[in-house]
Length: 200
Image: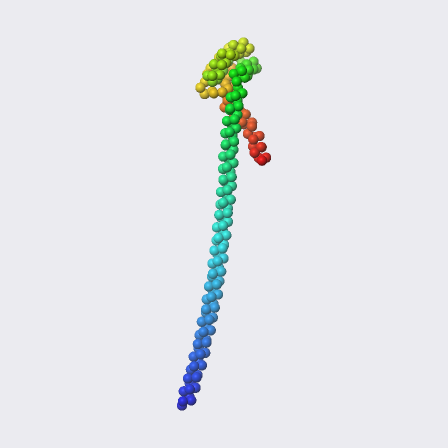
């Protein structure tokens, strides 16, 4: 009887060990499956994060490039404006210096001599008050004598250099004021300036 109990206990122990081993194998298998799933999920998540990071990096790169391109455009526009402004200032200053009263007189005489206009029409010349006074004092009689026309000098507060001239008693005028001459000169200079800037 003791022998049978002993065999029974041994059998129970063996079955318990086998069941424990089976259970352990099952748990290990489930753990391996779970570990593989966790690793696969982690890899997929990492891949997704990397892809999103690459997309964001490209977006930032594109945005930075666009911003730099725009900044470059803005700088060139600003530089062009500054150059044009400086050019206009230089041209106006030089025109004002070049148009002495004697030069004005010579230009006006030449214009009147070469102009064709109806007889009896009054020639009206508008200039700055300062230039008007100098022309009246020094050159008006010469203007009238050489042009053989009725010449009237008028002062204008809006003219600080150069003059306007009308050959038909004021119905139409030709503008030779500093701003008009500066605009004409700078318009012709700007293409050359662009070529110079582009060649640098």
